[in-house]
Amino acid sequence: MAHEWPALGVQTVAWQPVEGLLEVSRRSRRSTPSSFRAAVVPTIAATGLQLPGDVAADLDEATRLLATFDAGGAGEIAPFASVLLRSESAASSQIENLTSSARALAEAEIGEGNRANAGVILGNVRTMQAALDLAGRLDEAAVLAMHRALMAQQTQHRPGRWRDQQVWVGGSPLHPGDADYVPPVAADVPALMADLVAFMDRDDLPPLALAALAHAQFETIHPFTDGNGRTGRALLHSVLLHTGAIHRVTVPISAGLLAIRDDYFAALTAYRRGEVEPILRCVAEAARNGTLIGEHLVGTLRGVRADWSELVTARAGSASWAVLDLLVRQPVVTARVVIRELGVSAPTAQAAMRRLVDDGVLLESTGHRRNRVYRAPAVLRALDNYAAGLGHRVG
Image 1: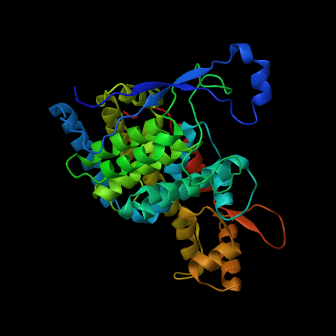
Image 2: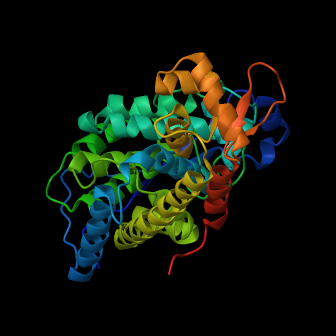
């Protein structure tokens, strides 16, 4: 067993009802506890860790597969980087029971449609992108920026700010007395996050171990009032990029975690007891499975693109062929999107999409004469099938 990792302590804290729930609290005064027990989270920046040989080998194998996938795997992955990022974001959201169709998410990305869940998941896409962009300077400001990207479109929580109130997981929504887990008091959060940032800059642990432990510590601190799970899984990717374990693409690690969700949640609980092997094993398995899931998705999309090549009647070099490549990563488009992404004129964009409608690649979604929205059903079907297949162990 990996050992010598500090377990949580506890402290008794007087309970003050959350503002807005005062009237409810008065009605249930007799059953509301006057105090609760909150976690006292140990610092880890300088904590030593000795990994058993089989755990280290497990992590090394998973890291090698991540690097191979990032480098291209069975073929060039880079053209599918945005699809992989979006798919990883959707899988991370699915762990929180947030789902959306591929069409709704793609429409939300270009400012079309009005599906609530799609907008929430789009926030997670932006968080994942921020995690990739900010990995070079992985500090408190970077973590706050990730959360700001996630929560920017909501009004109930403060985006990009450490929490200033008590939060808890499970139990009553009125008080933390019977919660499954009560994170540390808000006053402890800034110092704990500073310690976590120092931990993430270490170079004496295997990259995947560093990422897994940083993620578990983040979830244990629970520094925000909402969005901790999704921000924490984005942070896992930031650490992998920060260490150089991956360089280019978002491996679907959350898709791998979704397949072992019960084990994953149990591993986070075990971490709080000072047991780190379960979370190391879970993240290693999720990374291995994530590479397989990612390779399958990329292979499916390559097949769609190859089928289109047989359907399209446009002359070689015309804009229609460039639109095909755009559709693989953005399966819902408008003329405005095509003009912006390909740098072509409005008449050229409209003519290209009309040709692709005639050839059976695109469908027009609105029926309007103006402001038309086009979708690529084959790509959307592949993405929906991918999402439907998540939640099952690979192999």
